[in-house]
Image 1 (cartoon, rainbow, N blue to C red):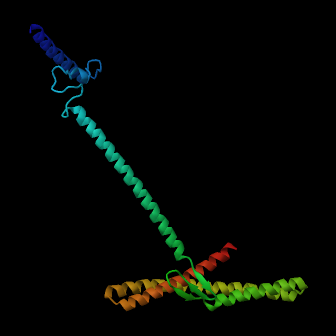
Image 2: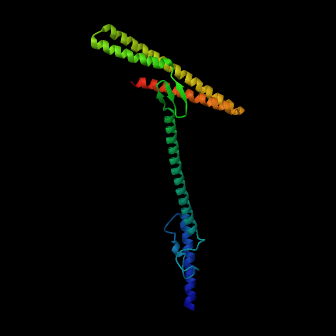
Image 3: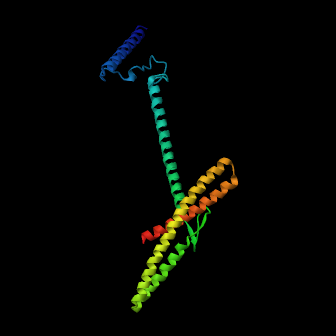
Length: 226
């Protein structure tokens, strides 16, 4: 019995000394004065049966904080990845819509757009293109036959045709931009007043004007690339 009491007393003394050394190590920053947590967890005195502390011990609180931070970091990472993917998809969609809005179908002097707009070329565009074709043919034939007069006539007709076509393109470009603005503003006004018929009318005006503008821009760019 005496030995048992002596052992218990010794364990209390050792625990008190260990706690004091650990506190001293915390104040001085010396790891040599700190005692490992295992020294506090004496299975002979503790209510638990292992070397690990109970749930309320700061060890578990720190562990929980680290795990919670890791979960939040992973969630933020996944959220950022989702935002980047969505932004990329929206960017691709906008680019496709922009490219689609510049696509114009053409049948002679008629132009068609994906939005349903329809426009007709300024007559100078088709006439100027025809004069270029005839002028080039005369120029080639005159050069082949050695007919200098025919060759010069073809050159002049070709040059006049280019100017005539450019005049028609600029006319369609200007009127297209102007009518688009008119259609947009008119549609806004009709929407405010609740006039659905007028709103639809201005929408058609806008789409037709946009088709005319895009058609002229496409031809101008095509000639600039030659």
